[in-house]
Image (tube, rainbow, N blue to C red; front, side):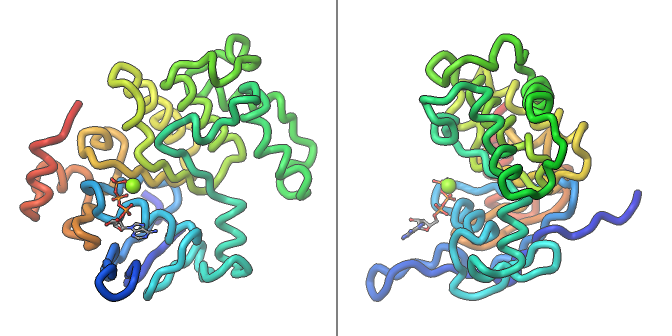
Length: 262
Ligand SMILES: Nc1ncnc2c1ncn2[C@@H]1O[C@H](COP(=O)(O)OP(=O)(O)OP(=O)(O)O)[C@@H](O)[C@H]1O
Ligand SMILES: [Mg+2]
């Protein structure tokens, strides 16, 4: 196997919120790295620091200490080269698809908008057939374009809406897709379709890295290459999916393995 290139790193990431009595350490010395094309799962209970870490890795929040790099460039404020590259090369999928989708926009408008924005900035969309890209993205997530292009979010089930949000995230061919609990607001029956959508991305876009955040190890077991387990703002375990699921070292990970669904 060829060596994968490191895409995103966080080194010694700490984040403290508040002062005095309110002071709270959300992250404490976290090291994490994501390589091109890999799927990393970030697992932990409520309040363990997953979303805080995600925001810091994407440059949307500043760590109290520690450094983030994207493709070797520091992510350090909005003007930094790493942050600029991240803005171009990453997209986010939220817990609730209805947060990502404007209720007044049809599916075709929601999914084509990121490409229209890129076109305005004259970046990588020269001569691109946006309509074709939108159709491909919808097909990839298992939605028939002819059926869904002209629908509004109100006419979609939660699972369909989340797949539209995923199509919107992947349509620009980003180097990184970050999904924060993409299945937890979706009913159980439709979760498999979301997982299948991510599996299809992995297959057809082998260079795209995915960070999947979840409190449930079961959700990520078939999709992640590696798992990082957070507990009270610290990494308590990290390793291959096989090792973490079948040979967990930390007591906290063993609890998560027992509680895993699917
Ligand atoms: N803006 C903020 N101000 C103060 N405290 C915060 C802020 N954001 C997060 N925290 C605290 O940091 C800790 C980690 O929160 P975070 O949202 O990262 O957890 P999480 O793992 O994403 O949890 P969940 O599974 O519930 O989404 C929590 O104790 C939270 O209360
Ligand atoms: Mg969270």
